[in-house]
Length: 195
Image (tube, rainbow, N blue to C red; front, side, top):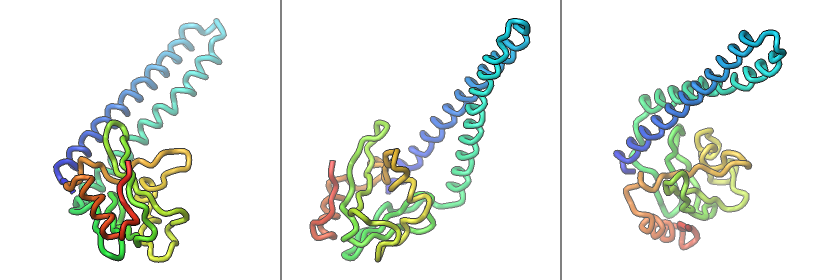
């Protein structure tokens, strides 16, 4: 794991999320103020249903801002309380061990359960997305750690959403082709990195 790259990425994500939250809050506040102004200024014009509808539409924006800021502060507390993991993955002849930010312990996957990683471009950054063998889950024999909430959000977040990527390629201290060679070596050719 490249410590400096991970810390820099955390700061970039925090800055972007904070700016987005404040922009959303400002838009929601402008909408609510405009609706209240319309209620007061045009009392006899019968616009009150539209003004109330605008207020109702803006309240979720304000609430989402508060939730985003709370989530960000919880994440920052977790970062402060937990040391950055020194390794992203460890390979042995028996299993692949993955560190996942926010997880209490590493994920352990026996080689028959792993197809490898897929290199994807997500928000302009290359990530390695874990590919499991079909039917593999938290209860599969030998698998440990897939049931942790932090792991579920990056491995299988939601059937309607794409996975967010397990590892940012820039945060790894080994190039992708070296990781691919190591995966093929330890898994006897069953796992690798695909693009």
